[in-house]
Length: 422
Ligand code: GLV
Ligand code: MN
Ligand code: MN
Image (cartoon, rainbow, N blue to C red):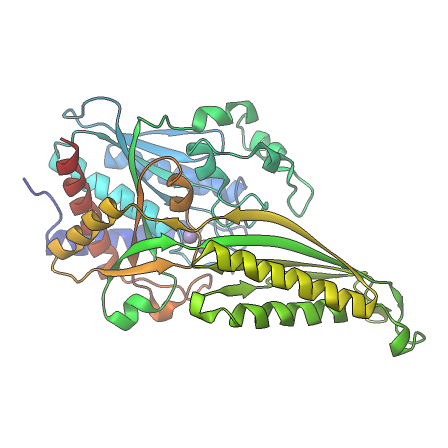
């Protein structure tokens, strides 16, 4: 029996999702912009709100050592210990939109709510997961929560400090959890039947194709690193230009080289971003003696990404030698390009077609929890059209109609997945 939502139900789900996203989007550490950092008081408030929605939908709720909220529903028809995992994240970037992450959590809750209300007879249980660290906005430990669930949490990240010097290990304890419980967050391999994540596209493809939903083919690999350039601080009025070792002027040259090198791989969809830079001592009348900046580099193939990093390193050394500076690279995050499971892609495409929509297949240039969960079990992603392709920006927007459709496609996907599991 098909139980997926009809058109009337879809629009009710879309309206409800929008109300939930507004409520969640109001939980911020600042009144005039959305900032919700991992293991912060705002994370706590958002987790409590989500736990309430999960319970109201018919799930039992628990939290693991990294604060991932887990809503569990086991239909009577379920056999064995297999679970379908549905997730996304509730942390945000600085000055975020309301949809990046929470959309997938809300869609998962509303899909399960619909299945529970219909008494869907599935042969497996479902966990809806609200992860707390996808953005890496507080610590460098990007994707720590899903890594714990996938059993690949890196203990080295426990020593990473936030901007105030609080380490991840300390923040976990302050949040009321125990570092020693992190291994217990991992799913057993035979327990996780699959992982699916709904997410706004964060790019312009679906809008240009005039299609509300897309199926992700692969999530691009990423390299993130910190670059430190050392020169010599000096008096801005007395040191002649040829005698300076200006770490910021040298960094500017390296930053432009990063841009230039990434552009030379545009056929490979390479993108590189320097999003953070600090100059020390940071005074108008002092030549900068030390600069630190970040590089975030992504491309569809791992080989091209590695080749580009090599070129950036060589170019940075050339600039440093010419200016008599020192430059060091500290890589802190590396993920490989992750293909989505072909059989789950097909089930998602079929679910979208069942709703009378054309399924566009597209890669993801953004990182997602799905790329980590793919290390545990087959993983797939459903993208939802967003206005103007805008994301990581308060103007981010997906329409209630598209979100309702996404929740309906998720329900239909779950039904199709159930057919493959009996
Ligand atoms: C996560 O949003 C990313 O930076 O890809
Ligand atoms: Mn995201
Ligand atoms: Mn994001």
